[in-house]
Length: 79
Image 1 (cartoon, rainbow, N blue to C red):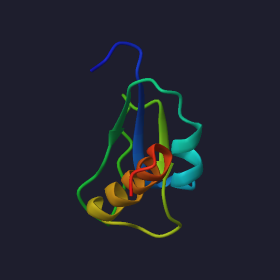
Image 2 (cartoon, rainbow, N blue to C red):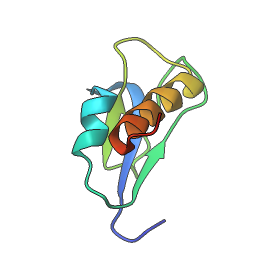
Image 3 (cartoon, one colour):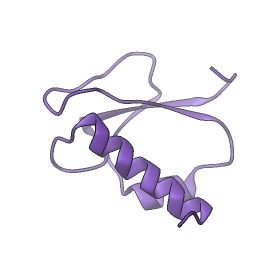
Image 4 (tube, rainbow, N blue to C red):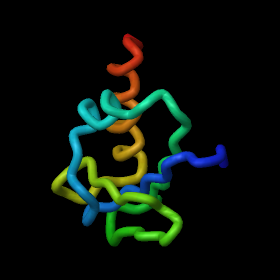
């Protein structure tokens, strides 16, 4: 992992964020995201700096990744 990068975990019990606002506010530094592979339960590994949620409802790993990537697409102007 890059030195001094922020590590974000994703879980339904994390801090609820809007992915468009969240990605827009990120500095242009390396970040790491940890995703679970199931829609049930949650992960809370101790190596994450912060735990985030992208919905009030449980999401599959694929949907959570899609929501986050959509935020980065908007930030970088990718159509």
